[in-house]
Image (cartoon, rainbow, N blue to C red; front, top):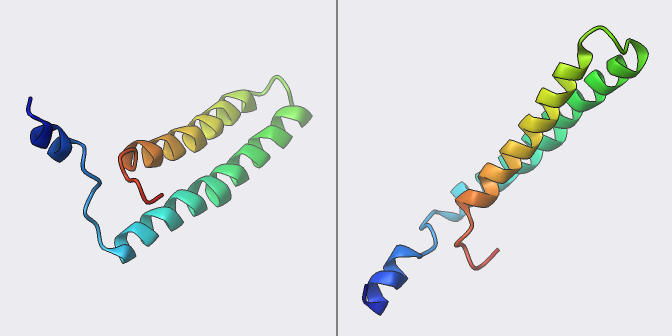
Length: 82
C-alpha cells in the first residue's frame, strides 16, 4: 500500500462536535449511572443472599459496563484530539 492509502485508512472519524459530545455523554452516563446502579444492586443482593443467583446479574452488570466502555474506546481509537 502506498503511504497516502495508509493515511486514508487510519483517518479519524469526521463527526460534528455535537455528535462527538453526544457519544461522550452516552459513554459516561450509561456505564456510570445505569451500569453502576446494576452493579450496586446485584452486589448488595449477592452479599445478602449468596445462593440465590444474584451473582449472575452481578457478572452481567459488570460485563455490560466493561463492554460499553470498550465499544466507545474502539470507536475512537484513531481519533487524535482525544
